[in-house]
Image 1 (cartoon, rainbow, N blue to C red):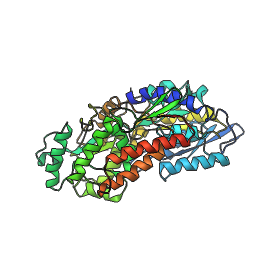
Image 2 (image 1 turned 45 degrees about the horizontal axis):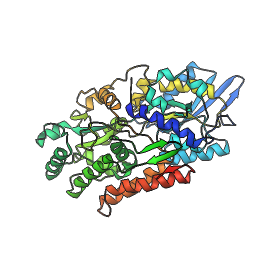
Image 3 (image 1 turned 135 degrees about the vertical axis):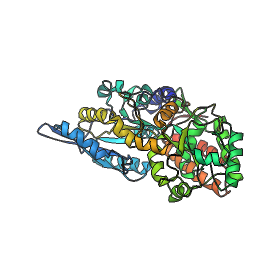
Image 4 (image 1 turned 60 degrees about the horizontal axis):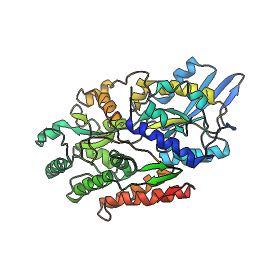
Length: 438
């Protein structure tokens, strides 16, 4: 699927410039690792955190196809079931002990961080021959200062999932386009025990940063210093939108990854929510089939001061780790794996590969009322605002989630998420030894 992701393209300058402040942090040489070769046969290890849920083409099955066709480059894939932040900590430990895999899934938001920790290997000489298989924006996010450290896998634009039939029962004939219209509709729905939006405290660092970033980035590099502004007009609009909904109890507050969130869909309470494109198959599972054929995907309205733009929530690269002794073979497999578009789509991904168009799987089309939701995801991908992540963003995201939880019980305000993000961003960059302009 061709993606001219404006956020990713715009990020190139800042990510490249980041190399000025981080010179010497990365690794350009291969050390020992747990990949092995035996009489010309090479074994590559790959750690991922793809869903591997029922109905998807399992990663091990995709890898099995490669192994059958490439007897001299055998791949062993392992799934990491913990949180993304826990996987980064494990990779850091394993690189130090020489036990890290050759390849690991790394979110775009995490790549600057693992680079500063010296966990990555410069594979530019191999990446150059594969860059034409991927959209230029995602490819730029696997680079630091012009050097590539892996290949892009997918992107995660935010969209709106809603139950069209339930909307019509409430007299909401179309998705509201302005914040005022949306809040009025949310009040109408809440009076009937229905909710057309969710506030997800455990997704503040991902979703809410993406929504705020739709109207302008938080992080820039000026000279050799980072400039931080997480309290933008977009951030204020997001805070105002959610605060109004919370104040009148017209939004659910179940954490996204808590069973209560799934229950709110299954019992017909939650009939609309912002979600990342990759959530489509997970959302279908969460629903337990409730409303199958009635759900639709829409682009975000201008609810967050975003002028019709969307923002990022997730999206990953696969990086070659410092320890890999076989980067050439690892990259050969990685290019193949990341261009298995139908298999990656089955995992709920919006692939970064441009080698073929992604098609909406039939079971997704059934759930979403016959809609070609992959086209909606592609449109959203092409309509991203400019957003760049800073090194150490995981610490910022963790603080945002913690602060977001306080707004659910009234002990804090949504605006506090962004003021805490500002303080944490500056402190984190300074702790990494990086220059911050204030």
